[in-house]
Amino acid sequence: MIGASKISNDMANCWDMLPRVSRSFSLAIKVLPQPMADQMMLSYIIYRVIDTIEDCPSPQKKELFGGFVSLLSQKSVDMAQVGKMRARMLAEIECTYEKELLQNLPAITRAYYSLPKGARASIIKWGKVMAEGMYEFQNRPIRTFADQDRYSYYVAGVVGYLFNDLLYHNRIITQKTRKELQVYAKKFGLALQKVNILRDVASDIPSRRYYWPKKVLEKHSLDYEALLKKENRQMAMKVLNEEIENALEYLYSGMRYIISLPQNALKVRMFCLIPLFMAIESYVKCINNSDVFDVGSKVKISRVQVHEIVAKCALWGTSNERLVSWFLETISKANPSLAKNEQAKMLLAVNKISA
Image (cartoon, rainbow, N blue to C red; front, side, top):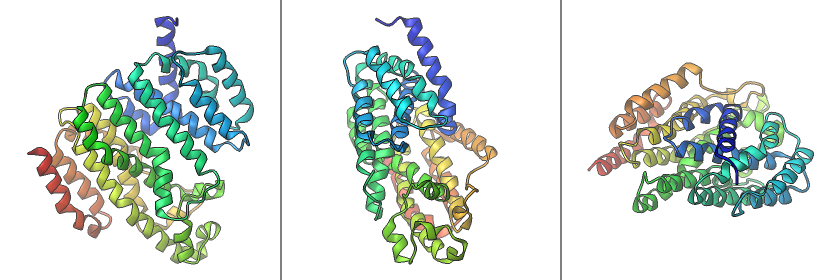
C-alpha cells in the first residue's frame, strides 16, 4: 500500500513536469476543477510517454508500446515491473526533454494508480488505441486526407473521447450527453492536431515526419523535399490551400463540441476553449502565408495573444452567443469567405442548444 504523502509528492512531481512537456496544454489543464485536473494532467503525461516511444528509432517499438500499456493495465501497481520498464526505455529511447518523463516513470505510475478505477480504465483504454494506431502508421504513409484523419484520430481524436469519458466519470455530463457529444469530441481532438500538422510542416519534413497527404503533393508535382524549396512556392501554396480548406470543418466541430457542454461548467469549457482558440489563431496565421514553408521559422501566436485568449475564455466562456461570434470573427478576419457558408449553421446550432 502506497502512503498518501507519497502519492501527494508523486502528483506534485507530475504537475511540476507538465509545463516542460507542453506549455500551452499546461495552461488549459490547470483551469480544470479537481479531481478532473489531476486525471487530465496524468493522461497528458502518459500519452506523451507513448508519443516519445513513437518518435524513437528502436526496432523494438512494438514491445515498448505493449510493455508500457501493460504496465498501466494491472489491478495494482507493480513497482518491480515499473523499474524494469524505466531502465529499458532509458536504454533504448533517444530523447531530449522527454528524458525527464522516463526518469520519473515510477512517480507517474504511482500517481496514475491512485486515480479512481473508472478514470484509469478510460485513460488506458484510449492510450492503448493511441499506441496501436501510432504503431500502425510506422510503415504506412499518409497518402490521402482520409489517412491524415485516421492518424490524427489516433494521436488526438482519442483524447477528445477520453475527455468526454472523464466528464462523465466526474458527473459533469450525463450518459445521454456523453453519447450526443461523441462525434464532436473526436473532431475537437482532430481540430487541434490538424492545425499542428498544418503549422509544423517546415520542421516535420526535415525530421522525416510526413503528415501532409502525399497524393495532394503529387497532384501539384511535388514531393516532401520539393515542398519546402523556395522555387516551388507557387505550387506549395496550392497544397497549403487544400490543407487550410480540409482543416476548417474540424475547427467548426470543435466549436460545436464546446457550445454543447453545460453552460455553467466554465472551467471545463475554458479547458477546451484555450487550446481551440490558440489553434484557430495559428490557423488564421497560416492562411496565404508562405512562411509556413520556411525551415527555421515557425508560424506561432504571441504571448500577448495567448493572454488575450485566456482572458476572453474566462469572460465569455458561459455565453454560446459570444463564443460563436468570437469564433466567426476570428476565422473571417483572414478570409471572410471561409466563415460565410457555415455562419448560418453555427448560429442555428446555438439557438437549438440554448432553447
